[in-house]
Length: 623
Image (tube, rainbow, N blue to C red; front, side, top):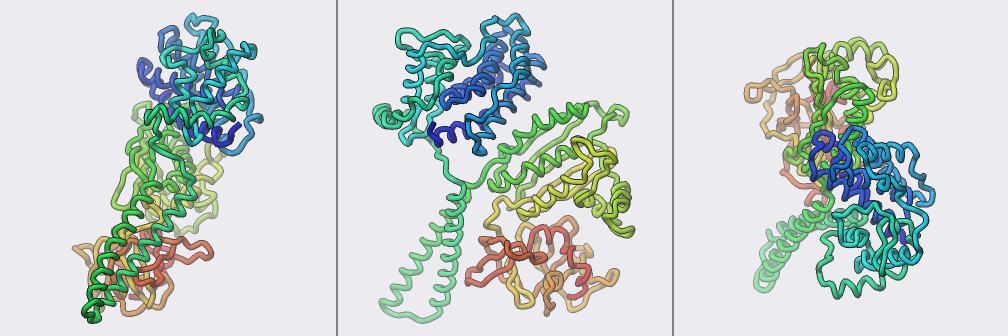
């Protein structure tokens, strides 16, 4: 079997399997939706065709039985019942599990056969309404006429390969259905008069027997068919995209540095041909700078993915966990089209799973009627873009968190002292401490004190922040802020204590002048800004530098606003950020190069959002 062919199948089939779960949960709410019924039928039919082509018999069998079920549902021979939905979800889960194993490098021959309980529940769902006995026949009968099987394999392999040797899934779908996609393919009769055998017969053949000769035939077919089968996208290794993005970023930096050098050079007087050359150089550099910026933007766009790719994995998780907990919960998703760096999308799955489990187990009441609420609870998962950040919010309309209960539990576990976490915000943040849990007895869902600390760690790893707002009896809201893309961020360049520093523009509100003396509250400097008394922190002080003459203040747009004192503001710039990996420096998350080529330290977004809390208490009065 061609490894690339198998890899292409797995990628495409995983996407289909994920969409199937979403369709099934929609169908559970709208059982008469024929469009969804047909979509599920087509998805299983297409996966079955591809699985047969790459010789995955267990997947073929599961898809075939599920296909039979949905043929019965869409033709009215069987009703859409809870057992039908459950059977289809189990089949979808089995298919997805096998695809994930293949994606992780498993040998196809090592995959498990279809479980008997899955076959039983599918057969039971099919026979729920006088379904013909033939529809419950095994999906891939072992005894099929050899000539017909060989013909099917040959015809299919020769027509579903694109010119580059990859699978053309539209052509594959047409091939396995004999051009009649609307007809059910449950019959297992052999083909006649040279026609292609039904898909069940094709699925039973060893796919490796024929495809070797197919790539040579495919280009000729493409040449005569014209652009009908033209692909609109190609699949590229993520590492290559990352390398391209780094080169694009460096080209922008080089163009910026060249522009600075040219500006300095133009201070000298040039005459004659030298002046003409300088003019040409300036025009050429301007064009090069524009093209490098366009290259950078185009490269960045290739890494952007909608969060919907991630969100669509959660409806089934919430459904099954709510069922296990005996709770009636609806998951409402919005903003799935919001785009963010693919690295962020890939890293958010585990944190969001922990947050949804936390909401289901801790947040949603078991007796909602007794709490004066409707029996059906709602968890909302939404995303939206805010300036250069993406916001992701999980809200449950449950019982909310009691800050005092959280404090007492943390103290009893020895996680904090008696005088710590006095404010409500600080008490709510205790849920992120490793080892913290309000559960007295651990269950399969929660109670071991792990999970929410994983959430905070994962979010901060990508220069993000997480905030909790909770009201007793109303519910709890977790808000995650992340940069839309990770490698380039808009910054304000500042200087203090002789160091060049960059602050993310996402939290910069405006620049103000600082006076020689300040009012004090509790011994800490305070400046009244637009009627608000704001604490003043020295950027040098909170980073551990020796404070200098800091007379410029930056008002920080954070949940609890404050002013950050610096010596000078030197402008703004989009910087290519290189994360710190070898060392850990308090408050600093990465480095960059300015247009002049100077090394710049990038101050962490979470550090600023939390009010420089890590060291501000020790050095807040240094301005």
